[in-house]
Image (cartoon, rainbow, N blue to C red; front, side, top):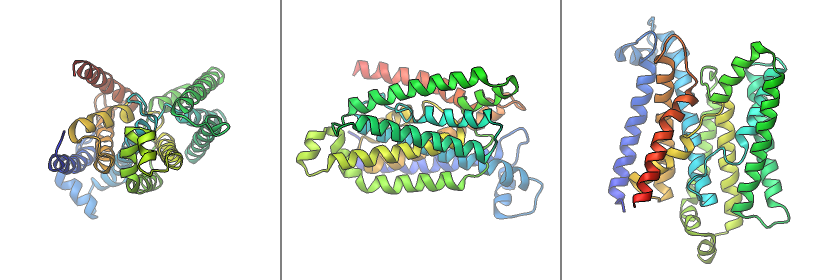
Length: 326
């Protein structure tokens, strides 16, 4: 079992990794910028690189970090809530609801804030629908929530397919990019960063209760945890985090599934350290993936969700083979 000292060391290294990933994102691109010029631009110096660094790359890098942190945090919370290692932020249909909203806005000819607004409303609608149906007469269980989420996600997928079928050909490309995850339109980052800070601030005080819930609802109840209240809190925090991330960047897979597993291997399952660690690791991973997505075939840009899937699939298969041997 990892010691607390090792866990704190890993957490410190993740802080450094986060800073390094942001620095790389600001310096690397179709127009390389030296690190000294990056620091000067951030300090307010009026240099030719200022517009590239501050106006173009910084908002995208911060949005990527916020979305990656939100998805990883939501994944860690969902895995505790459902006591299922395969749970991820998209398992409850929230991404599907956001997709229906965003593609509906594109079909109506909206852009920018209109797409974000419709996407967020769709995500919240899916969240309320899943929770309302799963709660039913009050017999709320992990299995019932999971099955309800899968059904709602399938329904949203059918609506998305219908919208793609009906959409004019000139809008298909933008819709597909959104569905595969894209940070190129992420210019307003303050709301996403605020949701990340709020979600972490709400979840961390309940880290001890989450540790007990991860061992089983019966044991948590016996030790004085209000399990129904905690489950509702965890669900709504995870759902809000997912909705904010999907609204900002579209559907980016595998961050919320892979990152919590990798971090647990390094520091254990103590939620007091795991939650901030997954935020740092998820944010760093998405920033680096997005940097690669916009530079690997520059000037063309790849959907970042494609790269996270290409990274996530072999990592997840490795984790499965590792657990099978354990």
